[in-house]
Length: 133
Image (cartoon, rainbow, N blue to C red; front, side, top):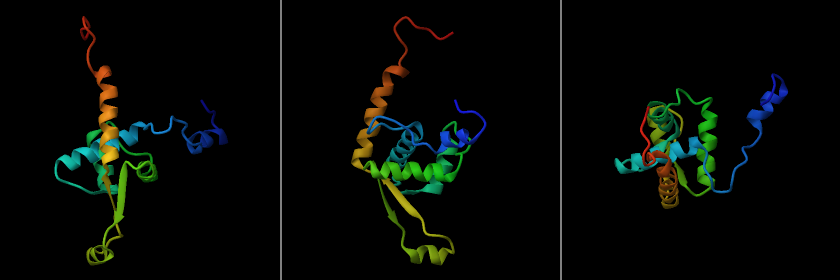
């Protein structure tokens, strides 16, 4: 654990070490919500929409910064689990707002979610003879 100095900031800025192809909890949450949106017929989502969905459906009261979300979206795209596209600039101009970047879960992303869910399944099932207190 870092102390209250510049080391505190380095803990935040230092890249997360993980196995190649593994996902951190925020990335798993993004993929799960993207898969759920896809099941509901919503093929594409934008970052702000995802932030609202994450806040509403997970225990994350707020993301530390929207940059955290967008870095996660970029990592997922770099891994091939999401694809993105920019909306037509005429739509944003007509609505008087900035351009939106839309994301969609890829087939590889859906496979990764199935694998993550099956890896977590043993953790969610109670052991034989186990009863909650």
